[in-house]
Amino acid sequence: MDNQQITVTSPLLPGLDELNEYLRDIWSRKWITNNGHWHQELEKELCGYLKVPYLSLFTNGTLPLITALQALRITGEVITTPFSFVATTHSLWWNGIKPVFVDIDPSNCGINPDCIEAAITPRTTAIMPVHCYGKPCDTKRIQDIADKYGLKVIYDAAHAFGVEVDGEGILNAGDMSTLSFHATKVYNTIEGGALIVHDAKTKQRIDYLKNFGFAGETTVVAPGINGKMDEVRSAVGLINLKHVDEAIEARHKVAVAYREGLKDIHGISYFEDMSGVRHNYSYFPIFVDAEQYGMTRDELYDKLKSRNIYGRRYFYPLISEFSTYRGLESATKENLPVAHRIAEQVICLPMHHQLSEEDVNRILETIVEK
Image (cartoon, rainbow, N blue to C red; front, side, top):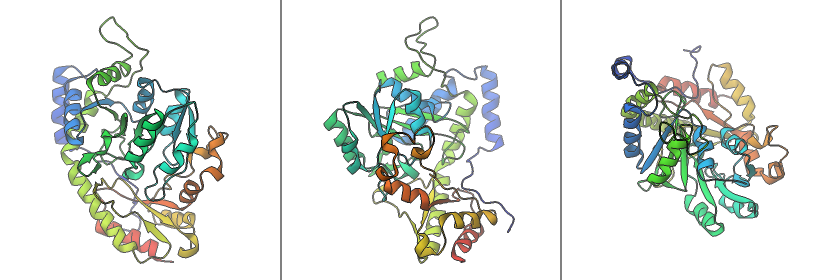
């Protein structure tokens, strides 16, 4: 067991028998992409599961972000978080939009609403928050600010598949929300993503934009891109949707075990479940206070790695520290003290539905040992 590798996440993969049935059907239809039968079926099934009115599938989780900005005609500056995966900010850069970073809330690692208004300028057109680790942002306060200043809100909800607040799907917040169905996510189509919107007209515009702008065989209505999901990955998505609740429950049990094992360790903190929230347990971040714990985050990270336990310093470094963005006025360390502190403390422990009790115990024993 000591040599068994334990990683942050493992994909929810379909059984070969189930997949083969879909593959035979796809081959018999001779329609493997371009809004095929199973693509349409997956969009319908996901709308029901996620409690959203309209959803458009994409070939990955970055293109929905890029397309949302195009569809809403966002320009100028967008207020966002430095504590995310780089796709969040890259989507702005690719659209010629200037990211403006604000600090994060330590209670959920999402954008801190208290910091937003001070960052608004005459060039600000939108806010792009992230539901980090699947922990919901304070959507009400963010929307109040957006309404006050006439701003759009696009949520990067890559981690928030199936997350609900008081029975309402979190993806209904803001003007649009995006999802990632990458293989490392709670729910996956191997590669994939989706864009959630509130009305049929916007859904149609999104569908044009992700298919080169075609509105018919010879009519192009917009300078679109190719963002379509194919039939094979749609089939993987339909199969995985049948098993995702089981996977989330298994992850919940891992989270409970982690909390029980870590509760008395000085210098190690973690998130409890938020009241009224249906979590998906996409990640289990811990935060290492080196002074109290007696070891730095990086020392613990290396110790885990030496025992074939592969956590992830997620998100480190901050987006604001990468060469593309570090020159921005909002990227200074003084502007982002909480984000910098958390980026220096965080390790996401292995979290997936196939972690055994033995795996979890080995991880906890490694953290407990000094």
